[in-house]
Image (cartoon, rainbow, N blue to C red; front, side, top):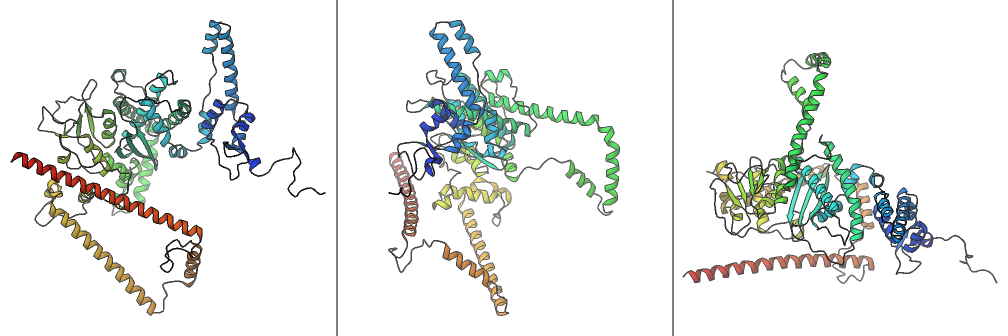
Length: 598
């Protein structure tokens, strides 16, 4: 009797998924480490479980790719973990023999490991590190707010390091005006910055007492935090050096004692940036005499090369050569949003968030307490941020607004009217800048008002007859009914102009066809037809509404599209119904007040 077709003698080499994937227990056996060390190595090296198509050992196992396991096997960090495990056995043995002096000596000389080479290995370029910075920032901001608990191995030193990294990151973003969006939610405050063309979004929890639950594995989170702290330290070091600021910063001890770390960092930025500029000027002055003759020769050559009828061309050329690198348009807008505005924070507002946001958009800010740059009695204060029902003492030279006004101005990139945000009033809805209202199918009323204000600031809307620019800048006139009608008329005129252009283009194409010049190439048409045939037609056929003529895959895809559209419609209807209920409740409340007064 012959052997079966797929018979394999025992002990022979495996093939397929059985050779490419191994279970977690098999991986631990290959690496010869404990389960906790295996988890640490996987987190540090970026190795994660895989889902093979065919699970050889069963569905209840966790599988890893064999190449990933081999990647960990040849890493020097594995040998370091083995060394630490062997050293811990020595300490345990000394404690078992009650040799306290030897145990203390061994603990003081315990080996440790660094993740510097792991960071360089996982992120070959700086842009790669910036792309992966969302989770590290969120994790570090979370642990900066947690209490230190020895039972969960959350040390005081770790909390202080997280707070330091948070303040250093915020100081850089604020100084370079890289912040773009802010949204206050129930979970915390969402921020988005743009650094070197990369959008980085993170979540900072509210400054409240955090309650730790028992259903969280803090050992895994602390391992992630260990890696994220190292990564964030590398990134901040590079960012500080890119703007000629020394790292790590040396802060004022008096401000550190008063918990004004962010303000201390901003002062350090100012002083350090000035000294770096002075050092560059001093180094350049020593070589000034040597380079004077060369510069004169170059200038003479340039003067001969330039035309005689443009005397200012040389001046412009020198200014362009010696000028600083220009900022992009978004950074300039953010830098000048709160320009020439002074803010004072009352003690009940979220101080740390506003100390980060306001300077990032060009404003000057102070607070109530020791170490503040200026006091509440300063006459040059333009806005005071208050979050209480009533305000006792009022200065007539400033405006009293709620904290939401700052965040809404930041997201809209315009100075919004302060009347809806005054003390004691219900502010307008806080709209999320991360949601595209037009794509969602529902645009809130306040979003339309903000768009009109943005159009007026960008000079897209001309003033009405008999109104000057000064009248148009007034917030009351911007929100008047006539202004809204004017914008609608301009939108209609713009649509009409676009339609006329399309009609003209269509007539031109007809003329060309009559003259014998074809606007569409046959080859291109054939290519487009073949592409259309290759693409799956998921639109429902009017002759086949049930979709029986479609394949199962196309039918499922069409059904998923319909479900998504219906879900979006239901969400829009729910929002409209909620709006109608709120308006009805407000009307009934006003009627009830009128009846009480009468």
